[in-house]
Length: 171
Image (tube, rainbow, N blue to C red; front, side, top):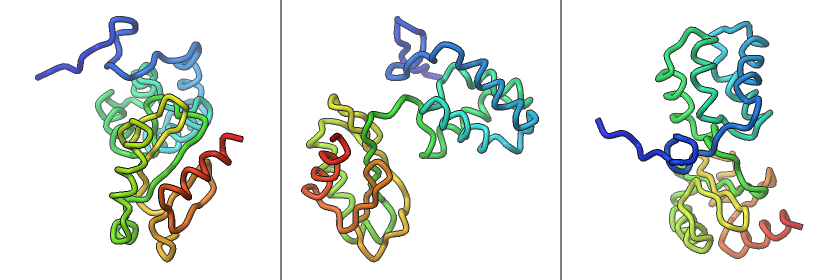
């Protein structure tokens, strides 16, 4: 088995930040509010992400212990669902739809263009604080390709409309 390269600063896989102070205690408290019920794992993760902005790697063992699950089970859920972040997002979050209707209207080319312009891969955060995330349906198929910028829906998205929405979100 090949192990991920670890950062010398915090021992975490490269690219993952260290947990903020008190994150493990906070995760344990969130689990307790859900009665340490393993069936509530998704809700626990959502609550924790709502509070911290992401799911720090360092809290996974505490969640696993509180819910009597393996660390692999918790990690599998966090890494499987695209809504869970493993690092903090930037102040501007652009969600680009990758569902079939949007793909048929050029979403994949738009994603490549937007990511290239920001110098990042899908799921990354640019130096100016713009996070670009994939989503799989925003419910705006009639106006494909669809995007969302800080919670504001953008229909018939193209690079120009997204740049305008990002500038507005920054001001």
